Amino acid sequence: MSNETMVTLQGWIGSTPVGRDVGEASVTSFRLACTPRRFHRGRQEWVDGETQWYTVNAWRALAGHSLRSLNKGDPVLVHGRLTHRTYVNKSEVEVVSLEVEATTIGHDLTRGCSQFLKSPPRETGDTRPDVAERAA
Image (cartoon, rainbow, N blue to C red):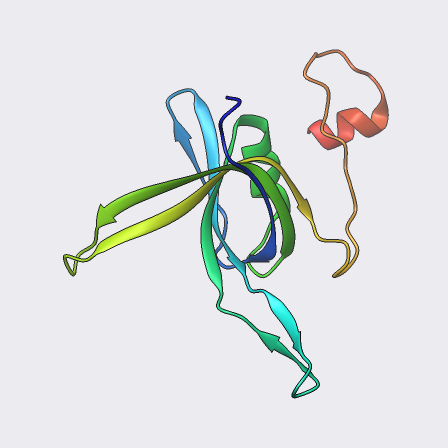
């Protein structure tokens, strides 16, 4: 674990988040587009760099929260473990896919506002009206 590559990415969700069950765990996946911007002093304007695409996978509780909270086009910050996968596509071309196993995902508040709703407690029997109402 100490030799894993951890990254923090700032970008826009480029696909509708999709949830599925893998064994007894749930996972939510989406594509994340990260486009660097630089100020070009010679032209006195902002210039977009080449967009890099990542597949983001969120597991267990983060998967459920992500599926309910995120939409295509949302600006987000993602922190997690960076991995890569190499495969041969339908055109017989070898492709490298960059993937992030997310440990944290959140809306990028430099781009807009968001509202946080605390998840209901795991124990049953909580009689507080606000918690019981959200759990239903």
